[in-house]
Length: 276
Image (cartoon, rainbow, N blue to C red):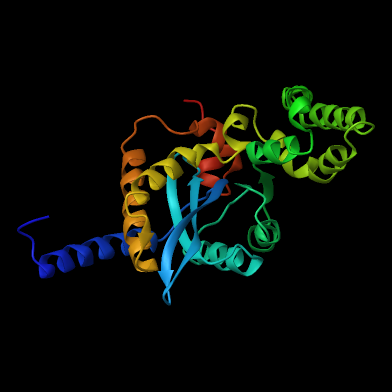
């Protein structure tokens, strides 16, 4: 860009950094029964090398049924210590009332969720399907996908569990590795079935923040390789702030107040309306 001095660019970056920092460090108030966490990978220069780092984003729905971006973090790995530090930072800022955390099967996250929030963990159903179909072979993927979908179509958690085991047993003679995989993942993939039916379409996967991740990828692809992690925080943080503002002005709640209120630990929110 012509006509802009280095000092002006530096001042603009400082203003953006201040706004992003205030946004990412803001207090988290109220109850947040649902939390989605997902990671996207970006390239950055570190000590003369180009490395990939994980950019973690957390989105939550509060007791009013409204959605917000709650935080982000950058890490070189997705080990339990990284997840624990990120979730602990959210807790220090006031995150509470978490009932369900939805994510991919990242290493260490399940243990961290149980340790810090005593919440249920939902393994993203979409990512599970990709892993499951890898065991089926090209010729059997369509049939296997249809079989597994019959469990997701059930109306209750009990019925879904029964159907899941039935499908696993049907597949065991021909695809034993897939059947064992289903045995090991049943509770985590079907965790969302114990929550209200009107919420399940948004709880079974990380899809609610996939659009946000897509926008981050679109904007960061222009940069390619970031000079440092501060530059990642500046750009991604600004995108998250922009998205959060957009959600804030939407008239419709992400989930209805009536359906979310029973999960709130706040008695003022959970109390039923008193008839006039």
